[in-house]
Image (cartoon, rainbow, N blue to C red):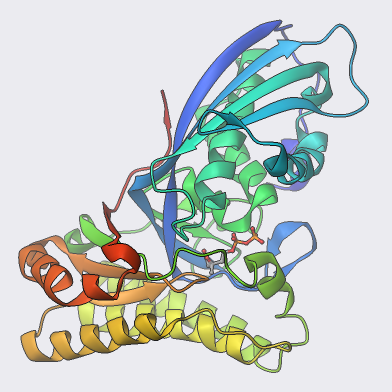
Length: 360
Ligand code: DP6
C-alpha cells in the first residue's frame, strides 16, 4: 500500500456526534528505531513486544460544527485536567494526518486521556497516547464509511499513529510487531507496522518485562532530537545495516526459541542505541549510574544462575528487565532483592507481553 491508499474518497454517511474510547498499550522495541527521514519514515526496520499493563485510555467525543473551521477545534484533558501545554503536540499530529482524515476541521473534539502508569515516570507515553488517539479518529472514519475492512482499519490506525510518533505505529496490535521495510518479511512497510507474520516459539508467548524506574525526570534530549542526530552521524550507515542483520538473526531465534542468541541481540541493540547517542554531535548520555549498576547485576546473576534474564533500554535511564515465564519466580525474587534498590523511590512496574489496543 502507498500513502495514496489512505486518502479516503467521499464518505457515505453524515455523522453529527458521537463518542469512542480506546485503550492502547505501550511497546518495548527489541530492534530499535533510531534515525528517520522526512514524514516519519524510519531509517531502519524495528520490532517490538507489545506491552499489557502500560497503556493510555483515550475518549474522543466529536460534534459536528455549523461550519468547517479554519483551525482544528479541540479541548484536551489529561487525567481530568484541561491541558493547554499538550495542545501543540496534538495540533502538529492533526496537521500531519489531515490529508488522510479530511473531516477533521468539520468537528469539535473533546479528547480525554489518562495513563495507567504514573505521570512523569520517565515512561514514554507517546506510543500509547498517539496510537489511542489515532484509533479514536479511525473509529469516526468507520462511522462515516462502514465499509472499511478490519485490515484497512488496523493498517491506517498504525499509519496515522506513525505520523504522530514512530514507535506508536507498533502499538495497535500485539504481541510481536514489526515496522519498517525489510527484505526478510513479506509485506513489511515503512508506512505502518504489521503483526510479525511467522512462527514464534512458545517461549516468547508469555514474556515478562519488569520496568525499573531509575530516573523519573524529564529527559534532557527528546527522541525526536536524537533521531535527527543520526543524520551525518559517523556510524549511521553501519547502524542501519546492523538493524537489518539483527532482524534476520532474530527471525531465526523466534523460530527456534534460542534464548542465548535472543539475549545477545536484545542487549546489543540497547547498548548500540545508547552508543549512537554518545557518539552523536552534540553527544549525550541518558543512562544514569544506577542504569549501569542494574546492568552489571543482571550480568552477574545470569552468569551465576544460568537463567535467561536480560535487559533492554529505551531512550532514557529506565531498565526493562525481560525474562521468560518459566523462570519468573527466581528472577522476580532477584529483582526485588537486588535491583529495586537502584530505582527512584523503589518504583517499578510489572508488565508482560500484550495483545494490542482495545475498544472499550
Ligand atoms: C528509542 O517513537 O519516540 O524508543 O518518532 O520522534 O516520536 P518519534 O520518536 P519515538 O522514538 C522511539 C525510539 C526508541 C526505540 C523504539 O521504540 O524503537
